[in-house]
Image (tube, rainbow, N blue to C red; front, side, top):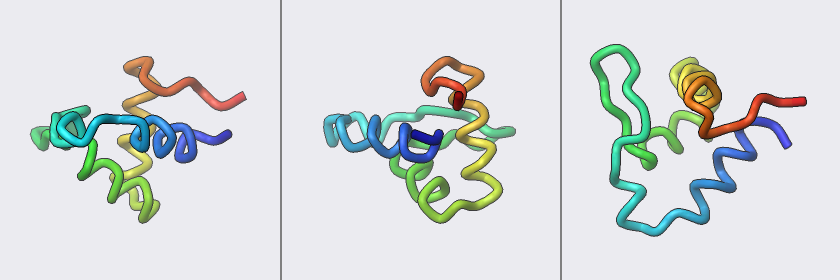
Length: 64
């Protein structure tokens, strides 16, 4: 399972209220789970940065 799939699996299991909480800050921009999902699903550059940051934070495991 790649990082995108792992992220979407975690997202799918979150309670709806938690999806509005901030998960990561890129630069000076805080992003909620919902905003992160949009970026990741659309495979944007920001989406890749989000996945990389979540691996660094230990929320996602590095691909094997």
